[in-house]
Image (cartoon, rainbow, N blue to C red; front, side, top):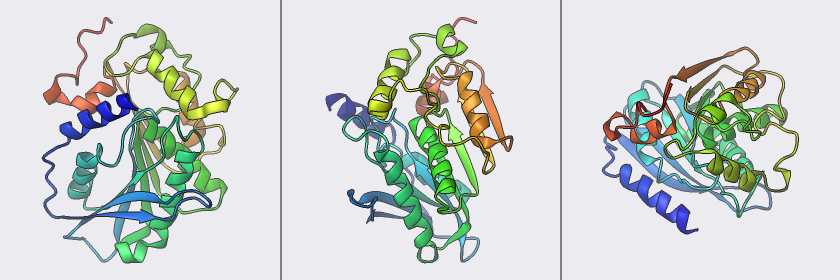
Length: 274
């Protein structure tokens, strides 16, 4: 789609000239879900390590389930590997609307299985594998943790959900209070969920927490106040974390702050009325 190409180009430009010093970066294709295509991943490995086996972060890019790629998140993945001294595995999952739920989630699960199976070769401690995602990636990270639990699959020690898309109902105080916000507003959120859930859109489910109800691992949920799903999405978070998580609300922030940052002038939205 033309809109996807333009968005990916914009994000790729913003992530250009990335410092990758001290890293080995390897693009690989790993086995996909049974009967489905293989999955591309990008592995960031620090050359200087604190030990033979170090922690890993399984990273899931954002983009409303419709746009984004391992290229658009290249800069953030590289910084994580450099600053934290961990292996980062970034996954290229299938996107909606061409491939609605559960295609993207199943791709993430297949890549997570591969990460655990290749832990020795990657120099990763399989007991210290975390999942991390932003926006749609945050919703997929939450769903992935629940899916791994329910299938008795790969162990996950921690999940970090940045401005996650967790609740397709979009019935929240913040959604009614804030409108025409930078980069993301209700029409985009509605279309995102419609394309991602396909025939399940509008059903009486909370997308990320529908399979849950029991907390499974420590979690941090970080979101801006100027978000469409603050409120009832907190219910989804509680169901996923089961009391073992921490929520951080950044007042007067939106997901634009995550993309543009303070240099881009979007980190504090002073134009939004209190």
